[in-house]
Length: 66
Image (cartoon, helix red, strand yellow):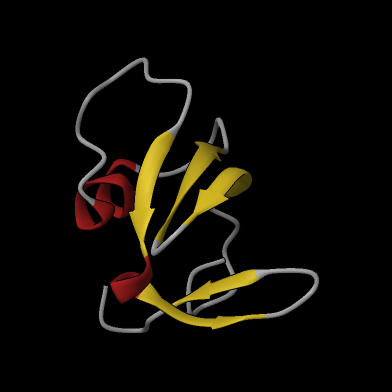
């Protein structure tokens, strides 16, 4: 989830200080750019812990400055 509450995708795999996210089909290009997910057609994209604000049982919330 973005800091504004928009869904980004689903965690596919997590290990160490990063996770691999399967992005939502309707994820905007601007959010993709801010996350560094510029390659088209990938099934999952890497999300570094440095971009994460909080983690709960139900969601990963991204930092507001993305």
